Amino acid sequence: MVAAPQPDLHRAHVALYVRVGSRFETERTNGVSHFLEHMLYRGTNEITSAHEVNLAFERLGGYLYAATHTDFGVFSVTLPPESLAEATALFAEVLTRPVFRDIGTECGIVCEEILEDLDDEGRMVDADNLSRSLIYGDHPLGFTITGTEAQVRAFDKPTLAHHHKKHYTQASSVLAFSGAVDPKQVLALADKHWKDLPAGKSIRAKKPVHTQEKPRLLIVPNMSSQTELRVCLRAIPERSPMRPAMDMLMRILDDGMSTRLYHRLSDERGLCYDVSASFDGYEDDGVLDFAASCQHDRLHTVTREILSLMKELAKDGPTAAELSKAKQRNAWDVRAMADSPEDWGGFFAGGHLFDRFETPWERLEKNSKVTADDIKRMATYLAQPSQLNVLAVGMVEGKNHDRLKKVISDFS
Image 1 (cartoon, rainbow, N blue to C red):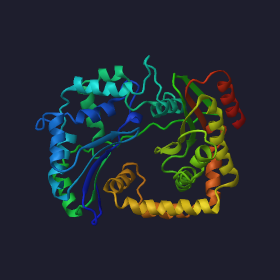
Image 2 (cartoon, rainbow, N blue to C red):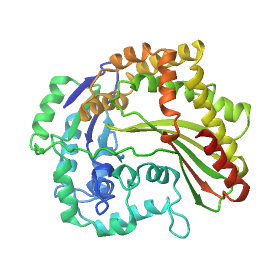
Image 3 (cartoon, rainbow, N blue to C red):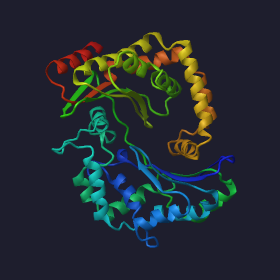
Image 4 (tube, rainbow, N blue to C red):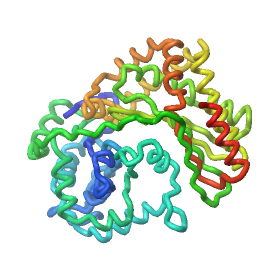
């Protein structure tokens, strides 16, 4: 359990972070973590419907939030401090004692969600899902979070109960309180309402093997007005000693519209309406992901500009002004996190869940020591042919296809 009080706030927050998600699944069970998340809303013996679950939390001044990610799941509620005791009891009831009613109804809802990532012929066209499949292949990091319709329709009560018993345990979860909370009170609440959570065994993940030697390109035909582009560079794990340099590199690339990525591709060149960069860090791997939508015949130019940015940073590093701005904004964001019970609790819970605990101030201190040479080394590590995976979803034919292949070949 984590207690991270923020006495100046006026809302209390309680969350459960769990080592669950698609990377802990098999081809047969892919999607069960996400489906289980939905089914936990369906109630218990005492709270007999999804409506009653939602109504109970809303009467206390909050609402139950839930999300399943690749390697963790989170349930949380933020509400007035005077509701915390009752909400904690309700929270434990819903998450530890599900009965899995109305499977058919929830199955229909999840299948509708799955359809959002498919085209009219049932083919996957979601760029994020496709890019992870390109990078990781049949490793669980390449699975979708939702699974397929056929997989979801095969899930039954025994499957859900087994997955719940395996993952929702003391060894594989962290209960976090933050905001306007009293540490002694929440410790007593946790002991009273969560003491029956099974001890369980810590869930371990299968590490992906990196055997790539040259760039990969996948083009998925899709009738659309623009092509959806992902330029992905295999990166460092979340727990890497190089993580501070990665943090600062991301701020150099994409931390507002004045930073390199948006300024160059949108403001200066007018190549796309929006472009972004993100870092997905896992406990044993990571991906630097550039995302953009553009006209089909601009695809090769956008890709070339993104790769050129990385090569320039590998060669010259950031300017002193860029690095100074990045560090200042990082410091401000850490201070701002102290105003958010959700972000504050999540920072501490994630650190405990993945055995990388540090305080925000310790993270800030490490990031403040990053040098321009550190960022150069980080960019050099990333900007290698063996790290590059490019995905395009759209009408990429003829000369547009040939131009894109040449850009990637030139990077090699």
